Image 1 (tube, rainbow, N blue to C red):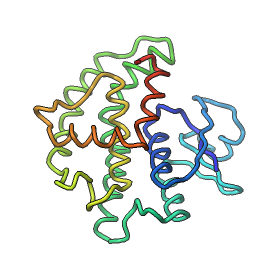
Image 2: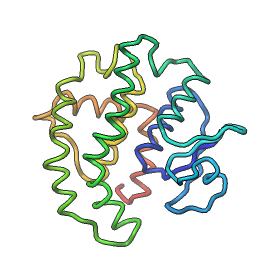
Image 3: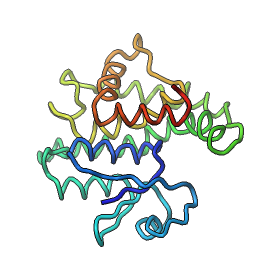
Length: 213
Protein backbone atom coordinates (compact mmCIF):
# COMPACT_ATOMS: atom_id res chain seq x y z
CA UNK A 1 0.00 0.00 0.00
CA UNK A 2 1.08 3.58 -0.65
CA UNK A 3 -0.49 6.99 -0.06
CA UNK A 4 0.50 10.06 -2.06
CA UNK A 5 -0.02 13.61 -0.86
CA UNK A 6 1.14 16.70 1.00
CA UNK A 7 1.72 15.92 4.70
CA UNK A 8 -0.11 19.04 5.94
CA UNK A 9 -3.25 18.34 3.90
CA UNK A 10 -6.25 17.68 6.18
CA UNK A 11 -7.37 14.99 3.73
CA UNK A 12 -4.01 13.22 3.74
CA UNK A 13 -3.89 13.50 7.54
CA UNK A 14 -7.39 12.02 7.77
CA UNK A 15 -6.35 8.92 5.85
CA UNK A 16 -3.12 8.50 7.82
CA UNK A 17 -4.92 8.87 11.16
CA UNK A 18 -7.57 6.39 10.02
CA UNK A 19 -4.85 3.90 9.05
CA UNK A 20 -3.14 4.25 12.44
CA UNK A 21 -6.40 3.49 14.26
CA UNK A 22 -6.79 0.43 12.04
CA UNK A 23 -3.24 -0.75 12.68
CA UNK A 24 -2.47 -0.48 8.96
CA UNK A 25 1.07 0.28 7.82
CA UNK A 26 0.49 2.95 5.19
CA UNK A 27 3.65 4.66 3.90
CA UNK A 28 3.32 8.20 2.53
CA UNK A 29 5.06 9.41 -0.61
CA UNK A 30 5.10 13.23 -0.47
CA UNK A 31 4.01 14.91 -3.69
CA UNK A 32 3.56 18.59 -4.43
CA UNK A 33 1.27 20.60 -6.65
CA UNK A 34 1.83 19.63 -10.27
CA UNK A 35 4.06 16.74 -9.22
CA UNK A 36 5.05 14.58 -12.23
CA UNK A 37 5.31 11.36 -10.17
CA UNK A 38 3.85 8.79 -12.60
CA UNK A 39 2.49 6.54 -9.85
CA UNK A 40 0.65 9.48 -8.32
CA UNK A 41 -0.79 10.54 -11.68
CA UNK A 42 -1.86 6.97 -12.45
CA UNK A 43 -3.73 6.83 -9.15
CA UNK A 44 -5.12 10.36 -9.45
CA UNK A 45 -5.47 11.46 -13.09
CA UNK A 46 -6.69 14.91 -12.04
CA UNK A 47 -3.81 15.25 -9.52
CA UNK A 48 -6.12 15.50 -6.54
CA UNK A 49 -4.69 14.54 -3.14
CA UNK A 50 -4.52 12.10 -1.57
CA UNK A 51 -4.04 9.24 -4.00
CA UNK A 52 -3.68 5.61 -3.01
CA UNK A 53 -2.41 2.34 -4.45
CA UNK A 54 -2.68 -1.23 -3.20
CA UNK A 55 -1.16 -3.64 -5.68
CA UNK A 56 -2.92 -3.13 -8.99
CA UNK A 57 -5.76 -1.13 -7.38
CA UNK A 58 -5.59 2.65 -7.24
CA UNK A 59 -7.99 5.41 -6.24
CA UNK A 60 -8.01 9.05 -5.15
CA UNK A 61 -10.15 11.06 -2.69
CA UNK A 62 -9.81 10.58 1.06
CA UNK A 63 -13.34 9.25 1.55
CA UNK A 64 -12.93 6.66 -1.20
CA UNK A 65 -9.62 5.58 0.32
CA UNK A 66 -10.91 5.15 3.87
CA UNK A 67 -13.97 3.30 2.55
CA UNK A 68 -11.62 0.85 0.83
CA UNK A 69 -9.50 0.45 3.97
CA UNK A 70 -12.61 -0.12 6.11
CA UNK A 71 -13.86 -2.86 3.79
CA UNK A 72 -10.46 -4.55 3.59
CA UNK A 73 -9.70 -4.20 7.32
CA UNK A 74 -13.09 -4.20 9.09
CA UNK A 75 -11.71 -4.32 12.64
CA UNK A 76 -11.78 -2.13 14.59
CA UNK A 77 -14.85 -0.69 12.89
CA UNK A 78 -14.53 3.00 12.06
CA UNK A 79 -17.72 3.15 9.97
CA UNK A 80 -20.61 1.63 11.96
CA UNK A 81 -22.92 -1.04 10.59
CA UNK A 82 -25.99 0.44 12.29
CA UNK A 83 -27.85 2.34 9.55
CA UNK A 84 -28.47 5.52 11.54
CA UNK A 85 -24.96 5.70 12.95
CA UNK A 86 -23.44 4.91 9.56
CA UNK A 87 -25.41 7.79 8.04
CA UNK A 88 -24.24 10.12 10.81
CA UNK A 89 -20.60 9.16 10.24
CA UNK A 90 -20.92 9.80 6.51
CA UNK A 91 -22.55 13.17 7.26
CA UNK A 92 -19.70 14.25 9.54
CA UNK A 93 -17.14 13.09 7.01
CA UNK A 94 -18.81 15.18 4.30
CA UNK A 95 -19.25 18.07 6.73
CA UNK A 96 -15.52 18.00 7.50
CA UNK A 97 -14.46 17.78 3.86
CA UNK A 98 -16.69 20.56 2.59
CA UNK A 99 -18.25 22.82 5.22
CA UNK A 100 -15.50 22.81 7.86
CA UNK A 101 -12.60 22.81 5.42
CA UNK A 102 -14.36 25.42 3.31
CA UNK A 103 -14.63 27.69 6.34
CA UNK A 104 -11.16 27.10 7.80
CA UNK A 105 -9.20 26.49 4.62
CA UNK A 106 -8.64 30.15 3.68
CA UNK A 107 -7.07 30.77 7.09
CA UNK A 108 -4.39 28.12 6.67
CA UNK A 109 -3.85 28.83 2.99
CA UNK A 110 -3.30 32.55 3.37
CA UNK A 111 -1.42 32.54 6.67
CA UNK A 112 0.72 29.44 6.14
CA UNK A 113 0.72 28.00 2.61
CA UNK A 114 1.20 31.25 0.71
CA UNK A 115 4.15 32.63 2.73
CA UNK A 116 5.86 29.35 3.62
CA UNK A 117 5.42 27.32 0.44
CA UNK A 118 4.83 29.88 -2.30
CA UNK A 119 6.97 32.75 -1.05
CA UNK A 120 4.12 35.21 -1.39
CA UNK A 121 2.04 37.25 1.03
CA UNK A 122 -1.35 35.68 1.57
CA UNK A 123 -4.67 37.47 1.50
CA UNK A 124 -4.83 38.26 5.21
CA UNK A 125 -8.17 40.00 4.84
CA UNK A 126 -9.65 36.78 3.48
CA UNK A 127 -8.07 34.81 6.32
CA UNK A 128 -9.45 37.19 8.93
CA UNK A 129 -12.90 37.10 7.36
CA UNK A 130 -12.87 33.30 7.40
CA UNK A 131 -11.79 33.27 11.05
CA UNK A 132 -14.39 35.75 12.25
CA UNK A 133 -17.32 35.11 9.90
CA UNK A 134 -17.16 31.67 8.25
CA UNK A 135 -15.71 29.54 11.04
CA UNK A 136 -17.82 30.60 14.08
CA UNK A 137 -21.14 29.16 12.79
CA UNK A 138 -19.37 25.86 12.14
CA UNK A 139 -17.97 25.83 15.67
CA UNK A 140 -21.38 26.81 17.05
CA UNK A 141 -22.86 23.75 15.35
CA UNK A 142 -20.22 21.39 16.71
CA UNK A 143 -20.52 22.79 20.23
CA UNK A 144 -24.20 21.93 20.10
CA UNK A 145 -23.86 18.36 18.82
CA UNK A 146 -20.87 16.89 20.68
CA UNK A 147 -22.38 14.26 23.00
CA UNK A 148 -21.37 13.41 26.56
CA UNK A 149 -19.60 10.28 25.31
CA UNK A 150 -16.85 12.44 23.82
CA UNK A 151 -17.31 10.87 20.39
CA UNK A 152 -19.37 12.37 17.59
CA UNK A 153 -21.27 9.18 16.77
CA UNK A 154 -22.15 6.47 19.30
CA UNK A 155 -19.83 5.64 22.14
CA UNK A 156 -16.65 4.92 20.21
CA UNK A 157 -14.14 6.59 17.94
CA UNK A 158 -15.19 6.62 14.30
CA UNK A 159 -14.33 8.16 10.97
CA UNK A 160 -16.53 11.08 12.04
CA UNK A 161 -14.10 12.06 14.81
CA UNK A 162 -11.03 11.62 12.63
CA UNK A 163 -12.47 13.58 9.71
CA UNK A 164 -13.65 16.53 11.81
CA UNK A 165 -10.52 16.69 13.99
CA UNK A 166 -8.16 16.89 11.02
CA UNK A 167 -9.00 20.38 9.66
CA UNK A 168 -8.67 21.80 13.17
CA UNK A 169 -4.99 20.86 13.07
CA UNK A 170 -4.54 23.21 10.12
CA UNK A 171 -6.47 25.92 11.92
CA UNK A 172 -4.17 25.60 14.94
CA UNK A 173 -1.10 25.76 12.69
CA UNK A 174 -2.50 29.11 11.53
CA UNK A 175 -3.02 30.34 15.08
CA UNK A 176 -6.75 29.65 15.45
CA UNK A 177 -8.26 27.60 18.29
CA UNK A 178 -11.82 27.66 19.62
CA UNK A 179 -12.20 29.69 22.79
CA UNK A 180 -12.51 27.33 25.76
CA UNK A 181 -14.83 29.84 27.39
CA UNK A 182 -17.20 30.04 24.45
CA UNK A 183 -16.76 26.49 23.14
CA UNK A 184 -15.96 24.29 26.17
CA UNK A 185 -17.18 21.02 24.65
CA UNK A 186 -15.54 21.62 21.28
CA UNK A 187 -12.24 22.72 22.85
CA UNK A 188 -12.12 19.64 25.08
CA UNK A 189 -13.06 17.36 22.20
CA UNK A 190 -10.36 18.76 19.89
CA UNK A 191 -7.74 18.48 22.64
CA UNK A 192 -8.71 14.85 23.30
CA UNK A 193 -8.58 13.97 19.61
CA UNK A 194 -5.26 15.67 18.92
CA UNK A 195 -3.39 13.87 21.70
CA UNK A 196 -4.38 10.46 20.41
CA UNK A 197 -1.56 8.35 18.91
CA UNK A 198 -3.11 8.72 15.45
CA UNK A 199 -2.72 12.52 15.54
CA UNK A 200 -0.09 13.61 18.09
CA UNK A 201 3.11 12.36 16.37
CA UNK A 202 1.85 13.61 13.01
CA UNK A 203 1.06 17.05 14.41
CA UNK A 204 4.51 17.25 16.01
CA UNK A 205 6.25 16.50 12.70
CA UNK A 206 4.09 19.08 10.91
CA UNK A 207 4.91 21.79 13.41
CA UNK A 208 8.63 21.16 12.97
CA UNK A 209 8.25 21.19 9.19
CA UNK A 210 6.40 24.51 9.40
CA UNK A 211 8.88 26.00 11.84
CA UNK A 212 6.30 26.24 14.60
CA UNK A 213 8.37 24.52 17.28
